Length: 420
Image (cartoon, rainbow, N blue to C red; front, side, top):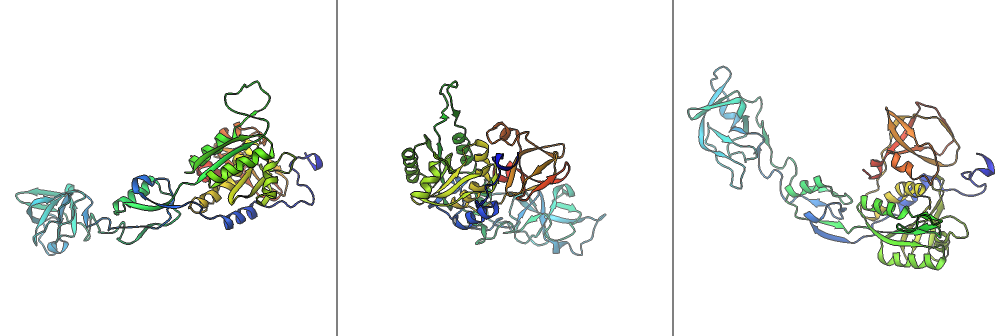
C-alpha cells in the first residue's frame, strides 16, 4: 500500500516524534512517585530500594573452613621432614565445628580436625582436605597444600561491614535477600509498590461473561495490562471500562487520580471525535507528546491528570502491548523507585525478507527457529494471537530499508522487557 491509501503513511506537515526522542523525554521527566517505607527483609522481595543496603557485619564473620579436613599453620610445616612428600603433625584433641562458639585455639606445631563452615582456630591459617590426609595414632599425615590460606574463606571476603551491598533503585530478588541476610541486614528502606491504574475506553467493548453473539469486541487490554503491571512488581488498580463519553472518561480519570500513582488508558488517544482521553488531557490536564513515529502504536497520548502521569495507549491490543513495553515500562520502573531499564537486543539472522518504509520505528512480533528469527505472518494490530506465538520483538530502525533473509536484525526477547 502506498500514498494516501496507506493507513500507516505519515501525514504531510505533521510532526511525528521519533521513538528515541520520546524515550529521552520520558527519561528526563520520570521520577519516583511512591513513598519510602522501612520493611523487614522477609517482606521486601520485589520492591525497589530507596536507601542503600549496608552490611551490618562481615561475611564471613570470621575465617572459616571451605572443606572438611585439618587446620594447621603453614609456618609449622616449614622444614619438617617428609615421608614420601607427606608431613606429619600431632592432633589437638577435639574438633572445630560450625556453631556459635568462639574460635578454638591451636597449639603451635599441631593440627586440628575441622568441619566445613567452622571458624579456623586461632594459630591456624590453612586447611588440608580430609581426602588428602591420613589420621591415625593421634597424628595426621598429609601432602601440604601449595600455598598458605588454602581451603579457607577469609573474613569479610564476600561483604565487609559498612560496605554498600545494593544501591537505591535495585529491585530486590530472592538471591538479594540471601546476600543481605548473611551480612546481618534485618530491614531495608524501600519504595512502596507503584499503583498502576488500568482504564479501557470505547463503546464497542464487551466484558467477560457478556453474550459472545453481541456486536462488539471483548476487552483484552485490561487483563493484559494488569498482568503486565503485576509481572513488573506493581499493584494494578482496575478502573474499569467506560464508554466514549467525555463525562465518563473524566470521572474515571478522577477516580484514577485518587487511587493510583500512574494511569494506563487504552483507546481514545488519537484525534478523532470520540478520542476523549487525548482531548481531555489537552483541555483540562496536560499533554506533552501524543504522536509517536512508531508501528504499531501511532496514537499515543502522554500527559498528566490532576498531577498523576497518564499513558494513553492505543486501543488495538497488539499496539497497546508494544507501547506498554517500549514506552510505559521504563518510565514506570523509575516512578516505582527503580532505574531506567534499556532492553537488551541480540543481533540474529532474519528468517524472512521485507521492505520497510522510512519515517517510523517498527516492532515485529517474532520468535526464534533454527537459529533465525521468524516474523508473525501479519502486522495487524488486532491479531492478539501473534503475541502468544512470539518469543519477543524484532526492532527495525526509523530509516527505510530492504531486508534479505540472513541479514542481522535486532531481536528483543520478552525477558528484555521484564517478562518470563
